[in-house]
Length: 370
Image 1 (cartoon, rainbow, N blue to C red):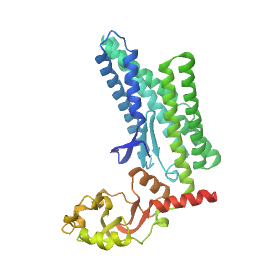
Image 2 (image 1 turned 90 degrees about the horizontal axis):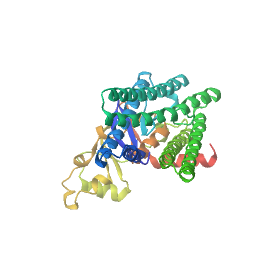
Image 3 (image 1 turned 180 degrees about the horizontal axis):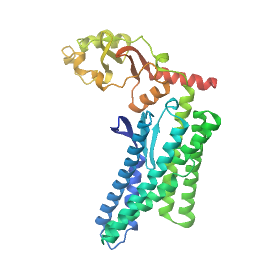
Image 4 (image 1 turned 45 degrees about the horizontal axis):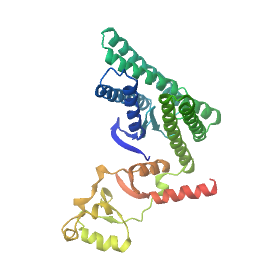
């Protein structure tokens, strides 16, 4: 997932923050600064805008926390969530979910949006009643933004909640999860494009910069998120039925912690050209060493430096299991920027899966139309 950064895990689920959030926070701050009464000093309006941005981010984060918790309790293993301004896009394998569960999650998402907007509206009423006009005005803008979010999620385009509900209907009708995902993702891209065109027309013809920029931005984010979902669906279809055990290889060099870097370079790297080495004790994985770990060590110190001193320990390595879908492996590698993953079974190393072999398989199947 490019254009996103890692956040701390949530309930054991990897969280990715899409870069569009940076633009969203700037836009929300700009809205408060320009639309708030000019009687207030500029610094105060900027501070209120930043507060509004942070509160909106927290609200969306809480929404995803609740939905993720609900999914896990319903037995849906969520592998990863990419957080966009309208909410999270979870990565869930089709074999791990059911139409009724997907529909339940879509409805829960819609209700959570209404609840968030209602909470902010209630806070606005309380602030008005106690005479806190400044903060009441701030929360009023948050109510407006959250209400727009409520309306947005009723649009039947993936990955919005309305799109997820539509995917369930198509999935039930066709029996094909990946096809349903492709269809609703195309719908999401189309709706996103319409928003962009509508925003441009709003800017040019009506000269309404606020709604124009808002529409363009929402359309761009939606189009981008839908495109990523569509690529994931195509990838899953291309690699359908292929697992880690089908793609792993046993032809990889094994080294021990006691090996010196001089020996590693002389006997392995310069001879085989390999850049990825597995550190083991028998069949137990202890860590890995890559060229990135070796290069920073000065040549004069390589003879006295052992592999165990520079290796990445097993506890910090992403590993695969034999029955893990190949599409999931490739997505993990792209996300983490790695080219190999060890495959473990009952704690023992049984093979290595390389990104190059997965990409080669995708290209071959694409050429054959398989």
